[in-house]
Length: 277
Image 1 (cartoon, rainbow, N blue to C red):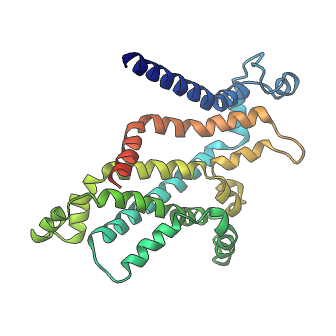
Image 2: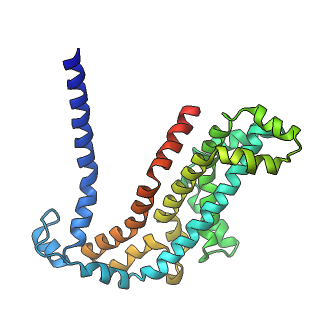
């Protein structure tokens, strides 16, 4: 029995290591390519190790793509998106969990339905509406759609946390004279902090990596976000693979650092939410 248990553990560890190596291969390939020259990439192939390390690729990529401007644009867009989503999803979740009002069931169904709508389905109508409202080439043309598209998932996660909080705790606060806003921000919100942190990280990373929406809404170079900086290394007939890989690494570094810092809180928030649900 014990030998069987040991074999099971060894096989599980082996497959975990194998899957981890398989998952890391694209990352290693991108990093390796970012340290090559474009000539070496063409001459020796994409899988060959760099003959010489070109660390100056990072300086070239940063200057060529105006990443200093794009970084601030992405930070601005991501920050406003996250703030809007957190405020809206906490308020909506509280109303759905602890308040009774006409149309509550319809609102719940609408939120669930929102989880099923892909961006590609609303892309063309959204573009027409933004153009009609004269919001093209503004950051709000990215921020408002991101809030609308990602809000259903955020509400779903926050609501799953709130539903586990004993209703007696909320009723006791009301009996003691606390208003709805006081109850929400002083009692309920501290208890759902893991979920809020998960929502912040998830939407921050999603906004940072969003490529399709900014491509549609932004044509001005000074308003572009970080992912659009990859277009700086593409011409009509060719693409600089080395500098494109370098730019990809530059874009990914802030996301990786953010994930490593908040890894435990993000995973615990999602796991606890799933268990509670």
